[in-house]
Image 1 (tube, one colour):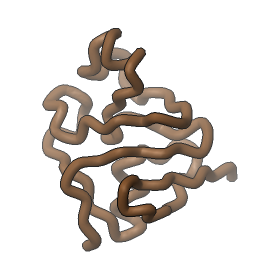
Image 2: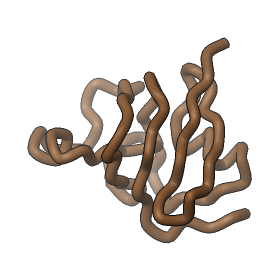
Image 3: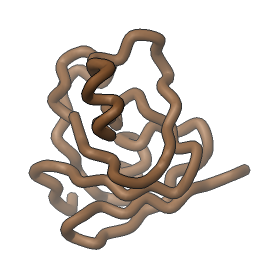
Length: 95
């Protein structure tokens, strides 16, 4: 099974995301807590900036505007890695 390396900035922490696993779930499996609430792509609590990488969404209507997508913003609760990723996340902590 394919996996990707996710790097959280500015901490420099890294974890692995298996193909098909959302970034939020992969972070939690690695003992890293990102802000989250609804977990279905609507509340935007988990909104992060992705300066490098590529994702696909598990839902057709994630709550990210077209302009935000162009600027590199994603919702990790419904985003699945399709490449190695650098994420800038708010209020990250180790579990």
